[in-house]
Length: 626
Image (spheres, helix red, strand yellow):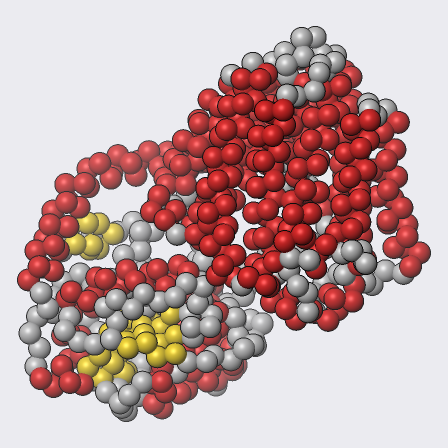
């Protein structure tokens, strides 16, 4: 999570909590028959000021109340380093900012009551003796109320008065309130899941710490579906109640465009099958689809709708485009440049479908034929092994890899893991043995995976092994032939994601340097310099290094793997090095004079890098290079 170093943590609410209030305010005025454009513009400015003041007040109070618990957990706290006088001044400034605009804004009984409820919720959420923040379900509910429900209802109460119309009917209030409630519940529960380690260290009792990450994610996976339905219903009800029939049409168009954007324009496309799992639904249905709608699309659409009726409000549109993240700027900055390439890819995909069907049919026939026959020695001594640890996507890619490898081999498939780190349990289907290893607690999941991978020989019985990354896909029978190609202590394939992937070309991806790996800075000598400084070994910049995704090892591999493991773990502490294992692998190969060790043939580790312009799909060979 990106750290927010502002005194009032504006990064947590400016682009996320304020835009929905602007949308609610403008939509509340739209049904008015003859609104005053100047008054509306001024009222929006004053309402923006009070919203900023109240949001800042809530975060300052929360930080003041959390100074001790954040210190225990080692978490940053913006108020901790300030003097008492400075804290008082900051808090007082937020109070003035939050209350002063009400001299101008319509201060009806309903509006002031909702404002009072908002302030009360912010106080009892953070302050003892009540401190709802530590009361599990009550804390989650309170956060949702003060973050979304009450502010949205307050916006509606104020701007129906500005427009000179009666308040919304019960149907609009109920459906919009339910949508806001579900959005808030999802947001705070997901936030608690991310903070669970911090909260456990501090001894806090949140809903996430009580029910656990797995149960919380399961709840969120269901909740986001209900929230999506509530959002659709709210748009329909608001359209019927206000006559703004464009709202549900706009919502549908947004969903269709986002689906196109995610599946075609993104560098890592999202497919609908990812929504089958709670993690995919939470991320894409919740944050990518629903949050983006209320934060970047709906506010701008509402402002444009009112500007079409009140030309003065085009100034509000321009101001919004400058002050907030929004769909229009994002489209110009990202999507517009990606569209030509996307159209070319769509045209290319249409031409490739025949080849894809032909390749798929050929693979199906090969799989149906079953595994190739192997010698008794290979059957008894050789095995496959994967390492998986942590995020759900890795256990999912493991499942895919095993599903493809299993029908094509008669050898045992083993998996080494730390089950306490896995968000999703490993599917045992097709796996002969799961070896559960406790990894060092101070490692993150990526570091733990590297620790397991580079020291994998310590956790397995003696034999000939082929390590496979979880993104390795077996495509035809005869994969066991790979075991015939280990001529040294280990055997790796060349790293040929591109035709010139040498040490200096790889350096920007291994080092925390200013080189980007693109254009004029596509290569650098920083990795070689670090290897020389740390290990006293000189490596040529044009050496084509090994790819760690597939490698062979056996009883005589311990010296090599022990050195690789030791160096990879040591590199975690070096600020110049990124958390990867390839730099340590290069250094180990040259230290032990194994740089000329026979390599695995490319067919056993062909890298289908879709960013490689030389990659093509050949009906006979499958993926191939021109």
